Image (cartoon, rainbow, N blue to C red; front, side, top):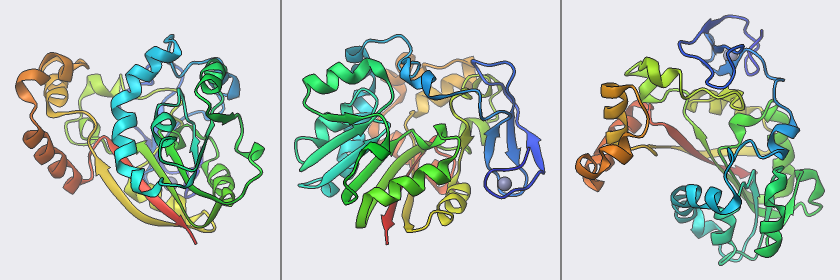
Length: 283
Ligand SMILES: [Zn+2]
């Protein structure tokens, strides 16, 4: 299997397993470090249409679960949203757009999940299934939170997204980091049997993101920022108990704003946070 980004056939098997599909293995390119699953065509649009991303939750439960991330993302990008035309690509239950709508000129979600249609209608948020349904080609901002890792042909889709932006427009996105400390530094076996998931076809780090975006005509990377979504309590719990949920069980007596801020800064300096945010400009 050739690497999608660099074409090399030289890859290694990563430790761990794909939690929902025993048949898949996790590969890492020895040339560029792109992480990818051993099959890229086991998921199609029907997987997303049939609400597999929300794992049995109703829309309100889904919104409650994304509330902290929605608010953090809104705070991070809000200066770009004021009186602007916004697309949220892979908008899920719409929690980010509900906040963006209050200050933007217009917002539209792109989402395949059939379950959310009624909710968008009731919230007066425009929704399309496919980016190509949007005829306007002069949007100011496109956001994509935890979407790019799901795309089997990200170059093609990012090129289509770029066409929808006006000159100077921004693409701002968030993805999981393939160099997450629990994998790359602590090498926690239980975590490596938990974190990989069949819809995450590719996992990127700063290096492979840079290679990816150099292939997109008209988009230039402004910055990559490392952020840590899960606090120190979560990592200590994985190391002690080999289980998730440490922030719920131990957070109350381990976590503090100061401690987690210092921990995030340290992980950032090593490039091994769990999450990357990046911003590109259409030139
Ligand atoms: Zn490669």
